[in-house]
Image 1: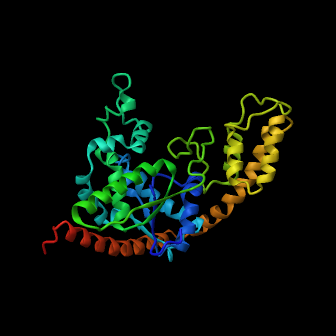
Image 2: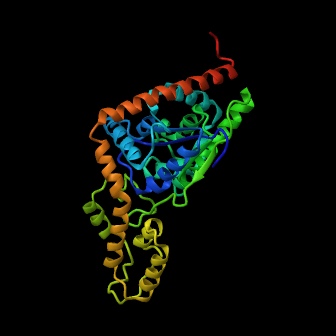
Image 3: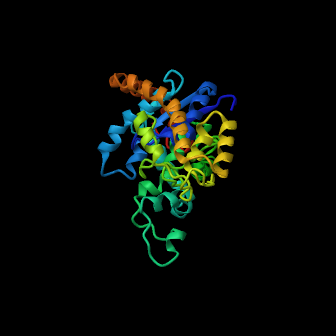
Length: 349
């Protein structure tokens, strides 16, 4: 990660408060990278959020402050990382339009990330058997949503970012971003460099219901702002082993959400390993391991929650951070677009 001239870009869609999946999947890497990068940018991706929330702009607007609070509370430092709001940097939209000429609709439909997310959000229309799998019916997907890989490439390349921490599910989008950069360079000359992805060890945190991914939309998340009571309620709901009815019964560790969380968040790995063996042999109840997890998660979340509550007392100060950062980000964006326009021979005046 100690690359010379490393420029980092990360971001969140403002569609709700951030959860533990965001924390281990991206935020922890953001904290490390802001210490190592020459430049670090944090984008609140409100334009991207509108691709599937166009009819609910209040939701997006109201959550801009929320995701900023979460990141500040976790330790993202505005003196080291430039915070900005995507829609307030119009150069990103301009570059998106230029990039749209470099990608076919067929290539967008083939992107695994987009195919998966279209299904999750109900954008793929069911037709003949097998058509959903092949992605041949996408007539009700908003164009903005389908073009997400293009807009993300523009987000990154507007700031000439070289490094982007992402979840594993976003790797196909970054791959397409590199395809776009390569094609632009081939047509117009070397302007952009390769984007390097950094994937967290725990890029996907299972939901409390056992769903493969913790998600705001699925309602199966533990948030960085949750109270201890909320943490307790959610942990006690967690899926364990349905056949582990009595304490003395042998239990399964595989697929057990409580142990999945202990593996990630419990610092005492030897004790977790011992608990797993005891659980598999019988003699360890679900309530006991859930109580341990509650204490482990409270130790992680409590300091973040307390800092968040303190920072939230002055929302004007947070918005000032976003305003100042956005002005700084625009300076970089304007310089990039000046180079892009010159390379494309459209710098007329």
